[in-house]
Length: 135
Figure 1 (cartoon, rainbow, N blue to C red):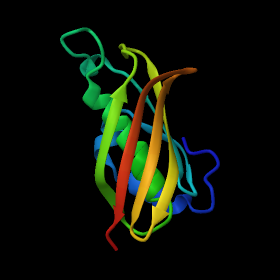
Figure 2: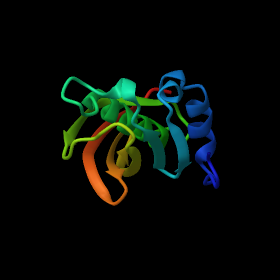
Figure 3: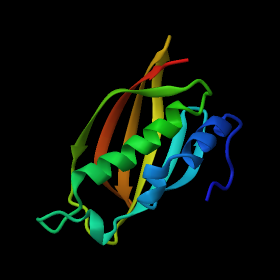
């Protein structure tokens, strides 16, 4: 799963290893460290809505998990203060999605992170998360 964690990956890896919700959806942490994280998920049949496409909540959850891993890569416990997502393309059963989270800015206890959710080379969603360190 996590092949070459960066020096700050420890806290994110520990947090993800205890994340039953994300693991229950089949998510895998591929990379974490220095304000960055990459998480992968295959869209399962149980994630499909009445229109025959993936329910947006699952795409949001994938992006939110990458966001959480990126903002917790620094060490102190950090949670979401808010987030929004733009769905750009429909996602279907069997698609393998990769969410790549990148730290944009941290000032004091607050941070902003961008997450791109892709299917191969195609971007399917863009997410922006706002974090708050609680420790």
